[in-house]
Image 1: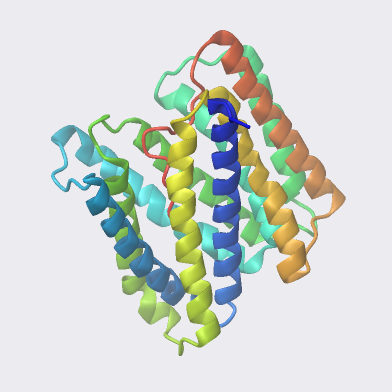
Image 2 (image 1 turned 45 degrees about the vertical axis):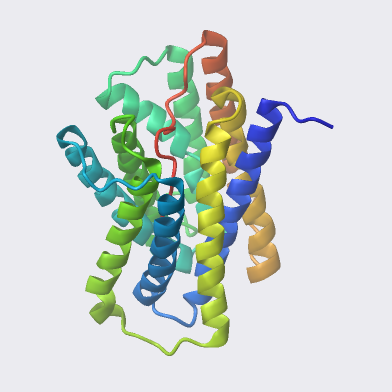
Length: 302
């Protein structure tokens, strides 16, 4: 059976989300025995090397950055590094599904921030969807209750960092290759990990740890490539909502690998966030406009 462009895009997006979630699970598992910054450095070296090879084979590496892109590359790199550190710090302490549920608010947060800082149009319906989505996030983190701790705030901080990264990505010129952007981000994350190594230490790398690091890097590369393919095939408004499948994968992996299952309030909040996000995408489709999600450089290094 011949798949349509939209079907292929949805398939690519779903596989990309599963790859990213597997990367997260590998990093959560390996940081039980390896210091966080060491794990980030080792994964960054493997990922950066792979991106160099891929970019070279594609002929897409270009290290001369146009003056108009330099500020946005710098802001994007800051968001990438801070987002990686905050996300993985929270991931060590939180159930995978709970943190993934918080991250489902990201598309709505990008839409709102783009409207405020980039003056992109936003109607009252989308604004209501964002407010309802934020209520869903509150159900997940539950401020003021026994289930709320500092790691929930770190998880929310990672969302803010990724919003900065994605908005800076949207400002990059079309001539800036995505592979170059991704490689620079991976390099910055690795260099930051080197600088932070004295605060975390170094532990012997066992065969299990090496396998998990290699798996995390491999899944990250697969996610990079497939999400680019997904965004270039079919209609964005139909393909993009499939990013929410990451929560399904996170729930299953969290239960299978770590014995963690989100409670009813977390699942309810996640369902509200996802429903409002999908409504926003379909609202944009009806209006014939592109939703505010990053499409020029959708790589993520975390």
